[in-house]
Length: 205
Image (cartoon, rainbow, N blue to C red; front, side):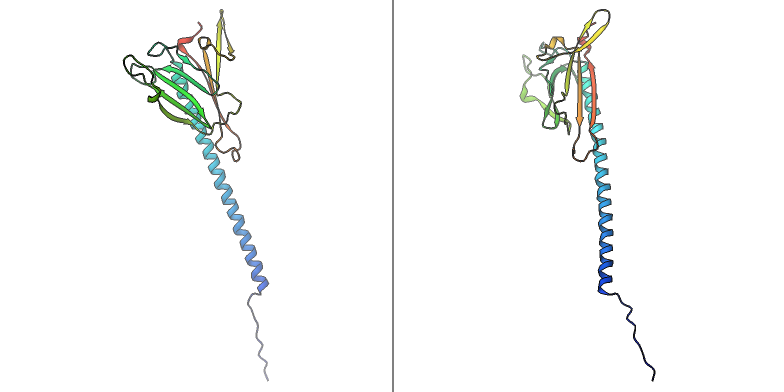
């Protein structure tokens, strides 16, 4: 009599569990790589964005401060110099008035306020101030945003840092320095942007 044998070619439960475990490990690995790549891309993008924003802020500040001059009501060109705020007067548009320009830090945001003179007689009404955000993620800490310099001229111009309290009539040069880092826990390194501005109307020589 011929014996007929049967052969079971299916997977055992252990083999199925091992295969599922390997598959899950692969999924987790791919997901981790994708998440890391996506996060790195976002950090790099934020770094570039912060750098561009910082450069624009420094350039606008430089252009506006360089032409600082007496206000439309006769006030001195520089008002209230401090480490994280500065007020000055400059004609920043195409009209005939000199605007009151205020740069100031609120939290980690550097803002700019502009007041046009109005009324008769002219006044700078603080309720008319237009405020915009110009730089985000400012993390200077104890590092001053604004630094003030004086100059002596005796054949050669000598520049020196002014100490507080600052006599505004001694200011000849102002530096701006921004440390920008929107995500300190993720960013590989902060972005530093700095510039120094010589005020044309206050030159020592």
